[in-house]
Length: 219
Image 1 (cartoon, rainbow, N blue to C red):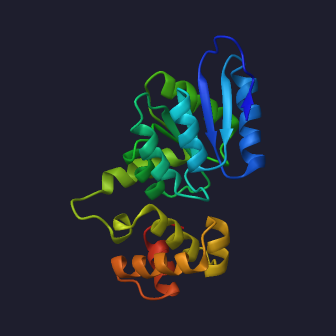
Image 2 (image 1 turned 120 degrees about the horizontal axis):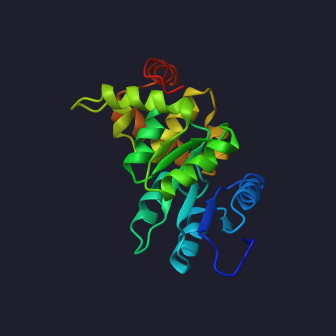
């Protein structure tokens, strides 16, 4: 769906979110704040990649937790395009791990979904000027996380994007069925991800996962 099509727009924005109300709300806010921009919305990684291959977007707002695939994987793929958009990760996740990983994979900015709309607008203006941006409440967490890095990665840093998402869902007390529903995965796939993350981290039970997540500030 294309909004606010005008002749010679200032720039093009792609919004990627698997919740229709959320992506339409983003599009409405952006159209009001940037009246000369063209805003397009997509609901999946597949749709987003198709749109990005057909059009040149200067900015892409990407929810890092999408249904068909991880938004972090989408970030990597968008950055490989001949004319890649600047990616702004938008997420409910406020753990430093997600900020760090998103930035490492190519995002230029990270904005929390509960941040005021002004922060999203600031992120767009900053990235268009070539500067990075992180939501104010997350910037200090990210800075501390960066300073504390050493040569030996923590166990959860070895997980794939989906494994990390499943781990955090479990740490928040979600049942496998709830995790499957939230991430649009089958219960069997969730079980496979849980098995793999337990093998990689050495964690055995849900209680172990919860304790680990709390110890490392993941929840």
